[in-house]
Length: 248
Ligand code: HEM
Image (cartoon, rainbow, N blue to C red; front, side, top):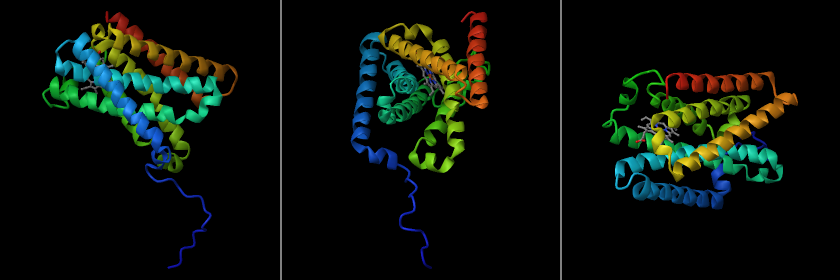
């Protein structure tokens, strides 16, 4: 049968064509990510939780994951401030994907070392996220999984309007992630690696809030976008209040 596709018809990108197109950056970023995690691990193993191999693996992966995800959100605020750097937009995606992959390894390590390989055990203790903040982590993980799966040029080209809708879930994932690490083991954040995470997370939150207010006041956002923003801010405030009320 004859192929009627015109030879100049736009080609839809392949699954990994985004990463392959910038392969030098991709390789460099993978090397940087591994170096970052090794530094986090060494810091945990030699200084923060000396000699505790299992805790160092769980925490270094956790901190690398959350730091990268916060940096990913922070980078989008920075690119809005300085649009001339927006050509580096691919950094945002790379940070997000690497952050999720570290998160997946963190979950595997936590399930293996803390919960003896039982995937459901972390949730059996209590379904109240203030009492059992691993629930917050589970929500963040599920949402980030969906976002990462749809983070390829392949998905962008095929999902149309749904791509933006699905990727707005990142704000809910961010909410889950922040309350997970703030409530799970706060003393373990009182060191340089924890301060780095708290610092970039604070900056990412401030940047997101700044641009949200800027767009709403300038009527540059859709009604749906404005409603999602109000919902996310309400979730942050209510959860913070409930945690404070519970003495956390
Ligand atoms: C992508 C989602 C997630 C991120 C970004 C994340 C990140 C973090 C961070 C930053 C911490 C604090 C590390 C520290 O103690 O200094 C932490 C602690 C912890 N997380 Fe997660 N987490 C996620 C999902 C999960 C899930 C689904 C589980 C369930 C198994 C889990 C289990 C734990 C445990 C057991 C701790 C306490 C570790 C300890 O301090 O010894 N996390 N997580």
